[in-house]
Image 1 (cartoon, one colour):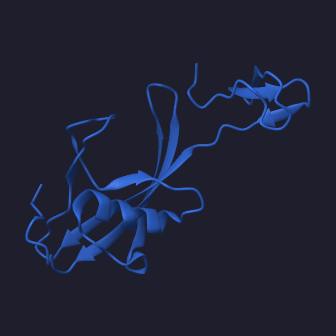
Image 2 (tube, rainbow, N blue to C red):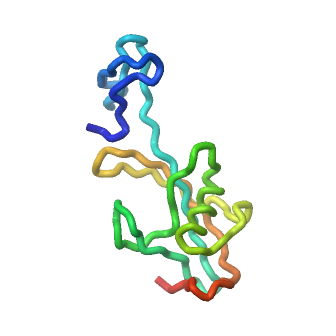
Length: 141
């Protein structure tokens, strides 16, 4: 079963069925004839590069890909702009701060996970001018 499936209609509370729509399984409410859309889960990430060509990377502490290297990234909070989410995740995961308006879109990424979850991310790029913190380092990867 797809983790993004809904067992009950958010509109009327009736049990849903799965129907084929445009060659894809889609949740459907037979009571109110509504399609319950499965939307990708949005996330934001940031790729900060320093003048000598180093990039800020974090070692993932959670699944998926626990223990692997990644750019700082994470899911958007409700109503949060992807650019602000990218800046927030950078600070949460590395301790580095950046003003969201100093980030520009580098890439958009859609990913189908093995468990059926669909995600969509916006990766932002920025320059690391200097690191004022003594406990954070940037390494060439």
